[in-house]
Length: 395
Image (cartoon, rainbow, N blue to C red; front, side, top):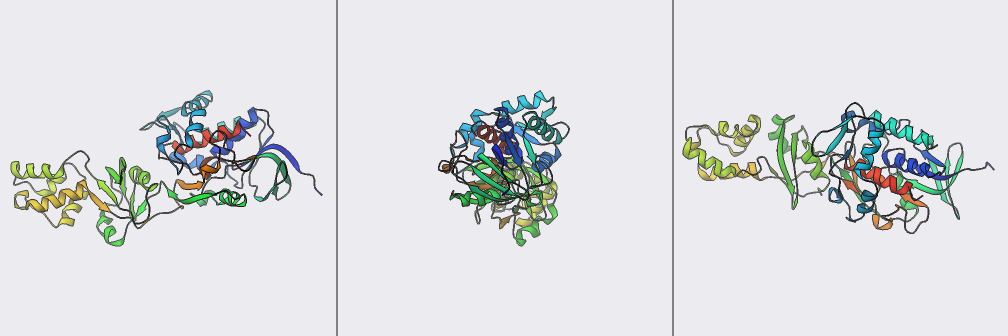
């Protein structure tokens, strides 16, 4: 029988969380093997931020994360903060800038972050195995056995950093959830997050002329609200504000869009009717909305011409559409283009201080595979760095 290759730690998944965990474990003198089934290293890092990697956010705090267990992320985020990662980036002299709302991007290329991780992993003697499919995992009395094509690997600590279901074309799979099921670990129902929303044909018929138009808007669903750019698409809506609300959206729930926050449009129109009665309604709306959008609202209400000739109840109905546009998406665009996976490994099964499975000694889950999902803007990368760091210091 072929003798097993032994490591202290095996990390499955060479993304942000997996690299961070492997590096930190290596720093502690552990022998580490980092395995990934892909031929390309850290592809999600490479494509993020339009190729410039939104690697963290200055405003990172627990309120920026979704989870059925809201307090779970606090420990990891405090053990390794956004400023700790920025210090690492500075050490490698990677130039970066704040785009908006605390979002930090590389000035040049996301490859700089990947190269930094590769350099750190080499420094601490991490063995990297790419294009390596894990065929089976067995739990021995005091170790884990990982079977791959050519060899069998044994380790004392096994870390699953295989990500979620988002963007399958770059290698996303259900691997982490399958391992959780193998060890009878509960999984919170998953769904696509940070993803465009789709609408029915009736609504799309009116919106079709607006495809490609971007406008600042406030989007809310119940008490959850986001204000940022909204983008009309040929399938529905996208843009930062829509992506944010999508992580919370559930089937058949309505969302409300305010196209001009902090302005009482009805009062504005009544004032215009009194002071500028001969002004055309389309032109009035076009002073604070993109003209195409102004024309669409007029078409929806079947009104045009001078504001003096429009009844007040019609102006009220028009203003409600601008301040309280109520729509029910029929679906999201799915995992195909979703930036993250909402849900995942139930964090009640995991130690927040170590990332170890409470009932399964030596088994750890980190990163996107867990039921922790950040808002848009670098938060999910920070969760990867923080959870990877914690596991790396406890394996």
